[in-house]
Amino acid sequence: MSTYMPKAETVERKWYILDAAGKPLGRVAAQAAAILRGKNKPTFAPHCDCGDHVIIINCAEAVLTGNKLQDKYYRWHTGYIGHLKEVQYKKLMAEKPEKAMELAVNGMLPNTSIGRKAMTRLRLYRGAEHKNAAQKPEEFKF
Image 1 (cartoon, one colour):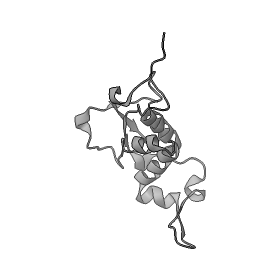
Image 2 (cartoon, one colour):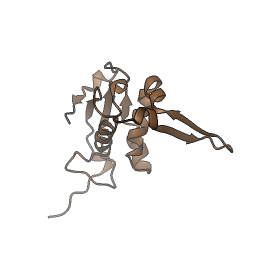
Image 3 (cartoon, helix red, strand yellow):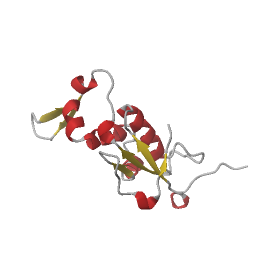
């Protein structure tokens, strides 16, 4: 019996919805990253982009445990000398909770073309309303 090798053309992509309300940001991001990669499927192969679409709702209600709201910072460099920028997660979660979730999911995906392609299948919404009802997403329990 030969080993099954998935091909990008034959992958069937489903839509899943994750509710982040009251759940730790990292747990939701880890589950979303696994679905985006396709690790929840029995036909997973690391060389093939076989992941599904993920919708994360209630990003604003995701929680950061411990003192992470005060102690954790998102830092980035602009490319100019001395231009290291930073924003505290307390401010980031108040103003742009979708960005905080996107950064968490992106950090859990590989830094390759497969990871970049997987990020295009992620949809983030601040509240409970989303625009993807036509795709008939199913609730993912975790």
